[in-house]
Image (cartoon, rainbow, N blue to C red):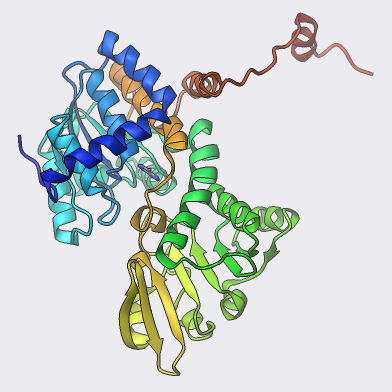
Length: 418
Ligand code: ADE
């Protein structure tokens, strides 16, 4: 078997950690048990480009139980858990191409290795596989039944491809499932981003002015959790509705140019470019800390920071100090890459349970419905989304109520009024 990982001897530790995560993934376990019996992915070549974590390992085991023939590469150069990669290779015989800290060339070499598997289904987190097929290996698209996409940034890229009529195969936007973004983006990012910041810095959050750039689901979760830890939260937004929502949620809202002068900790979760730039580094306080939790490392203008610095050193793991000409010290975490996956372990398994249940069901849906799907972006089918929510509630031992026949009739009728 072909693979490229850091060290196969790390497998034993990875295997235990994969088992630990599985404990917290009851919905995926149920799907895995059904897949074992029904084999809905029998013989299907599937290439996944995801963060190589314990949670992803459990998704891979589920797809494998369904009969899929897998290859896995990393969706980010810094997010791979090398022990997990080793266990997937050694214990589960899944070819993995991923090494934590790999350079850009290796990252793309690994992506190519995943594509050499000639997938019939692709699974993306950030649309790098689909982009590579379209840009560099277009002849492969004809053999792909469909793909899935995990994240907001990827879905934005794919919708723009569909709008321009260049998308060469159907894609299911897993991110848009309610049981994905309402939980993973909000509670997952909220907790794991702070976890990454704390592991990298060990700073006290209480009393800090913490600036969240972007008030999408990730920003909302992050603001909520930071406030809970005692930080004074400032929100940066460009969308008037979200700016208003943040204001009424009780946060201060202002432009980044104003926040730059008063923030202690800055986090970008916008999905856009150069949100924190040279002009902002120029006015930040001595000791200011900043990091990114959006998909790409484009949200902080690191090139400007490097140009402005008179010296640089790594002061702790994942914490780089940049000393400005006037002596102020600024701290960039995780090289501007996803801080929750670079310095911590990503979202906890319990929330990835729902995201990856959606991924497994989306792969099954693509294989079942390939003949009728068009080359566009599909939402996650509503019944599958509801199914994931019900299974998660069941697993948590929570019962919801049911409508009485009278209530049902009332909701379905337009005849009853005052
Ligand atoms: N994205 C965010 N957290 C993740 C995790 N734990 N595993 C895979 N992808 C993730």
